[in-house]
Length: 286
Length: 286
Image 1: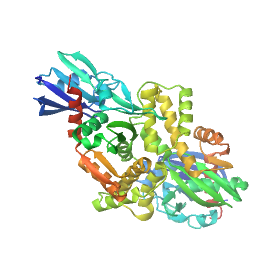
Image 2: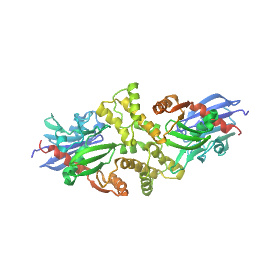
Image 3: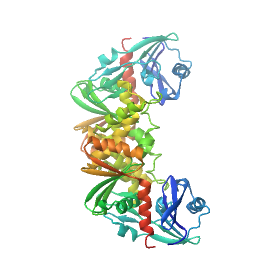
Image 4: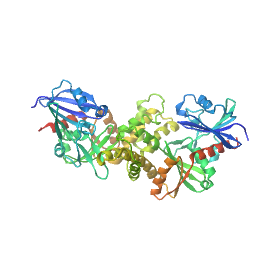
């Protein structure tokens, strides 16, 4: 086993690094996201601090144009082997640095991911039942990614700007400044939003009209907007049977509510554990 | 004819006032929008300046909760008479102030307008062919409003957050900072966006993927987003025959392109002329 192994997930908003000792995670550090620095090399060195690393494996925006070193997109369908085979490796400051490729979907529409594929391949490695048959997976977040797995391959995927739109809409005209919301109100709004159908640009405005005409609270409106956005994902992806959710518990809980409403079983996997498992796949025979 | 008549449209972002002499517009002034002041009375006085007014008629957000004086919403279907009958009149600083009600649509979903109804009733007053038969009307803008007219009534309407979403998305991850766009590129993006179908939250992300996978410019992406948003309006409203566009020429031109693509004839009416005509309806027998 090598001394000084570090694996990391470098997103737009944060860098997470894990130091491995004898193959197990011994320590954890965070640093700046790719979008928060013009000097990725310096940001990585700052986050590594006094860790001595002779091998660093990174996924996510580390491979973006504005990251540490641009890596290709592997076309779907893609399995862990074809993904690993496009690992980009180079020397930097005495260490061997390897950066994961992203995945692309080209079937009629363009779509990309960087980082989520590592979580998905990690999920498959940790949960062997995902390696056979067909499975629907969702990774909720800023850019919510839905992937269809077939016999351990990522067959196709689709990105929804759910989290980013929700954040942008906080600065919109939708939420009247009428003080704090009761949780229950937000929950009710979420259910109302889930059941609505139509174009988002029109449905979203109902959050405002509901406040003006029906005396709804800003909390209800926030829940409604969240329900409308997640409802649009389900209406498009039409998952059935069961769905594997890879994500933070609070956000995953919203998807569980939405999916349970439709009689769909959910399994929630810890995102960080999946990331680490995926990065270790890349490190395996380096 | 009264001396000192002033009519005005008070929106969220600006106040426009017109002074009438012998029933004709003699002068024009602007002031702060309702959303830009906590003291609407003072803002109105400042905009009026040295104009002596004994009668002031206002539409728009002047009648909103945070405006000069809250006015009701009139339920659709509504004609100019039922709308006028809900005019709210009061004395303020020696002048008679009248504020137009808004319109509401309650049919299964909540929707509201404040100000656009004045433009639509003004359009009908100025263009008598709109007073009979069925007509589709669109008022593009921050909140794009589509109204169906039937025999001079506003039968129903629907709001799309097109302009506001477009503005919010300028601060999003969608537009890579790759310098200025060629016009032609933006036009191409607009056409590409118009032809796309699906949920906005997924389609919008294609603006980013198109840049990453197909080397599209940020200008193309802006055009694509505009096309997707306007395309969602047309896909929902399904106008046929001809459409009356009440709006600024640059924005109206985008709708003309989108509608002409579908073989729909367009008439563009000047928004300010329609507003003035609508406000004069309210002033007529005061």
